[in-house]
Image (tube, rainbow, N blue to C red):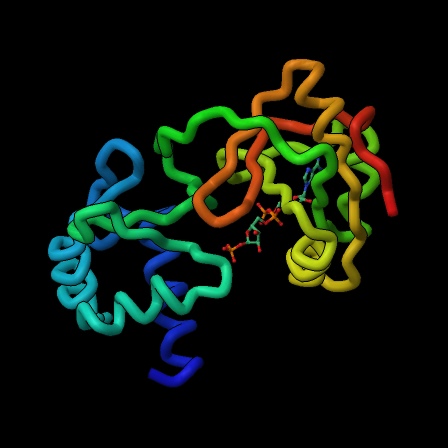
Length: 181
Ligand code: HQG
């Protein structure tokens, strides 16, 4: 597959595995899982056929490891980023002392007032590297990088989860734990 096609199919999968499963007749199982056969049938029935080999290519080739198969390879899920109600059954984990978040200048006044909020997603997304945060922020223009005192927030009772692809998730980050770089 060429990159354009991979991106198109990956976006289609993100849409339905994170946000609108019902639009193609799917419902997410506990943990956000969907049967691979069921997913491929639903994609085909809704005008976007994907072969098993193409699906494997999308899962393995994804720069951000957006999707994962279960151990048996019979089910698939989005690793994070859902807006539908789903319990990913992640275990709380101790974060690295410092994490980063990339955002847009326009969001700063609100972030200064109320800290980082999860907005339309299930969690605030944080990354261990400044570079990733810069890329995430750059989706909205000139990025602003926020340095998060994850150790401090964790010590204060913040519950962190690590999704399978190195993204750290937390409910909220009060402004006290945020430093603008
Ligand atoms: C901002 C993509 C106002 C927040 C990316 C962000 C990432 C506030 C936006 C992943 C705020 C939410 C997640 C507050 C936070 N007031 N704005 N209090 N608190 N914000 O897309 O972190 O390609 O839901 O800074 O690459 O940008 O989908 O979160 O700008 O990894 O796999 O509100 O999504 O990955 O935006 O991105 P998002 P995000 P995928």
